[in-house]
Structures are given as C-alpha cells and as structure tokens.
Image (cartoon, rainbow, N blue to C red; front, side, top):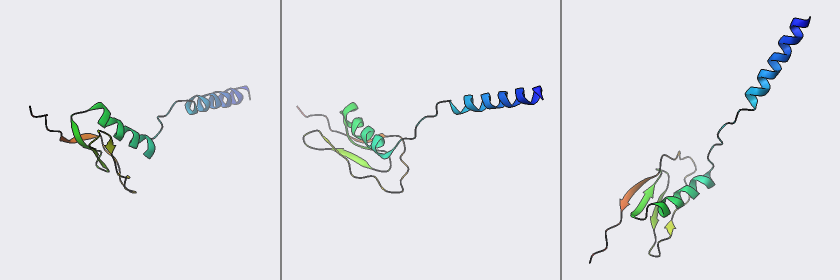
Length: 89
C-alpha cells in the first residue's frame, strides 16, 4: 500500500513539473504585422519586403505601406524583395 501511494505521488509530481515547462507562444497576426513594419525601420535600404503573405513598401515619406494579410496564408521569414536605388549625385 505504501508503494502505491509513493508511485502516485511521484507520478503527480512528474505531471506538475511537465505542465510547468514554458512553451513558446505562437505568433499572432498582430505581432507578425508589427514585425513586418519593423523590418522597414531596421533595413532602410530595402524599398520592398515580404513574408510571402504580404508585401510592404516604403512610402514617399519613409513610412511602411503594408496591406492586410491573407486569411489562409502561412508567413515565412521576412526578406527584402527590392532595394532602393542609391541617391544620384
């Protein structure tokens, strides 16, 4: 009887420990969109960038222009699709 109680206590302890482990939170659309806007701030030479779901471009004033994301799209890593031309002197 003592062995069964010990086994049950050990099993409960293992279950509590396993459920307490941190799991990374999945990215939601808002945080993915924020990172798309932030990519333009990080790479000023990029005129157009994409995550294969939406493509952002730089407006005349330098602000990012990003459309809404498609409903069934699976974003990939953000990459620069088009570099801006260097200023002519």
